[in-house]
Length: 276
Image (tube, rainbow, N blue to C red):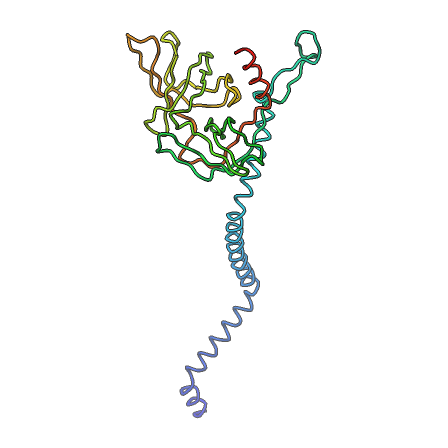
């Protein structure tokens, strides 16, 4: 008995350690399902984070393809709008719902801006589409927000457009609310505003009024966004208002644009030459 007592006295720490270890193993066994679930949750969370990271990197590298696809789809949808069509008689009688149809006039060529400037007196925009893709001189350029410019030079695969931010650029602009129109040109001050001329003093104009393309030029279809009235001045010795316009297009962040193809342009130009 004495020897047993001495044994426990000498090895009690070891025996206590073994007892606690055994108890821990028992607890682990009893809670085996909980530990498995916890492990699976941790593994799923970790794998989910890894997959999300991989998907994010993959989406980044395929983002340009997604953008190209969306821009092409938008170009197709824009071409289906009534502003891109005209009414055509299908017989010699008067135009009615049964004797007329909408015929396509405008199509759109998608392009990506590869070079741009906003601080020059005559700013140019370079595009990655050219003659082989259907781009020609004197075509208008727009984007999702409004007018951008006019094509002035073309090679086989590239083109250059004169920006709205050019002192040589002018476009016919009309008020959306009442159809009064004038000439819009860049004021050379900054890349966000332009000046509207030839609006008589009697025309009711308010700050915030919307300006769109008139459709009179062969550059743009009717109703393409131009901007809104920022300020106006009426001087007693002048017959026209001085109007400053906030341009709707952000020329400092141009990405994708649409080159406007007027399929009736040659016919209209030939008519112009006959009456001049």
